[in-house]
Image (cartoon, rainbow, N blue to C red):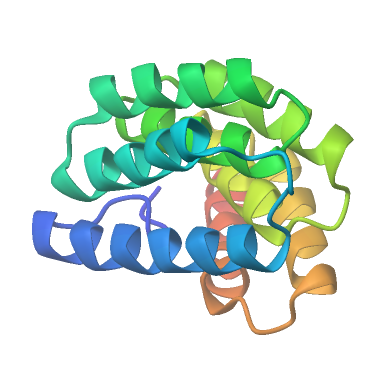
Length: 158
């Protein structure tokens, strides 16, 4: 399956990750927890930096530390899920996105990333459902709409 964001070249992948990092940073700033200390913010910054650099192993390690500090923040699980996605660890992506969704049912990023993981696994029905949920939450997510069309084409071929 060749969905937007799923099979991209290195330069496009970096652009996509950059925008994901910007969105996560903006979301984090908008929902910043008052108990986040300098240590937690440093791990957040490190996790995002590692994602941007393509160092997914260290992004996971830094995200693990961030989750230990605040296990109730959906953003922390989304960051780790994105790193797992880049490592082709789709079952782990799905688990982290499930956790993020339990914490924040209105997080379009969690549905989008989980949909991408389902798409990579060939679970197109689940992928489409997730992408539709992401669009309901944020109608401006063009990646999800594009992926739905491509997944439907794949279903027709099966």
